[in-house]
Amino acid sequence: MAKFITINMRYFLYSGLVLAIVFFAFLGFNFLGNSEANTASQQVEPELKIVSLEFEPPIVIRDLSYGGEVLKGIQTLPKTNYKIAAIIQNMTEKTMSDIPVVLTIVSLADQTQKISKEGKIPILEPGATARIAFENIQALGDAQGKSATAGQHEMVLAIKSNPEGGVTQNTEAKLIYNIDSTVK
Image (tube, rainbow, N blue to C red):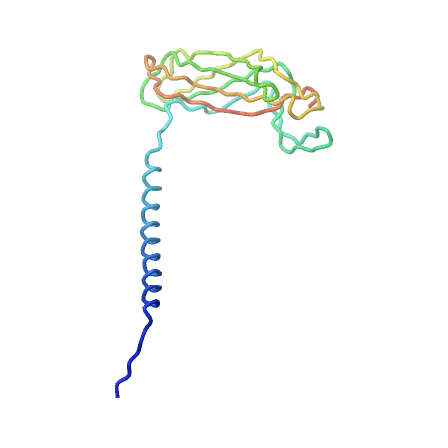
């Protein structure tokens, strides 16, 4: 006696759909994995590197209270007249000259208030470092122990390209800090 087993067509359809989803998911993971590996290998090394930024007087990092609200770890300058210096390093194998460096400071409380100073590094040998300083910077606002936003500043230090001098890339560093003359 022979037994017949009948299978509904819908079970074949469901099995086929599950296999198709697994197959396409496997293909998708393979394509995504390959694209990530390719983008990481295309990173560009900077020609000039900003090694450090120095503030005089130095920035202090501490918790401050404004209007009853405690803000943790605020980078604060305790004076309204200060100096910023940067150490810049040549990361290439070529000598560079007439490197333009621009310092821009904007008040975050009033975006129309802006300071811009420009300097030049005359020559920078391969692997060498240079220090450039911007002096007599007047604060655009002062928190004075009352307002968390009144003393906020954004500093952008930009190294501009100068193809004649051998610099083909722009490089910049940004920093947000607070001016509060009541901090000791």
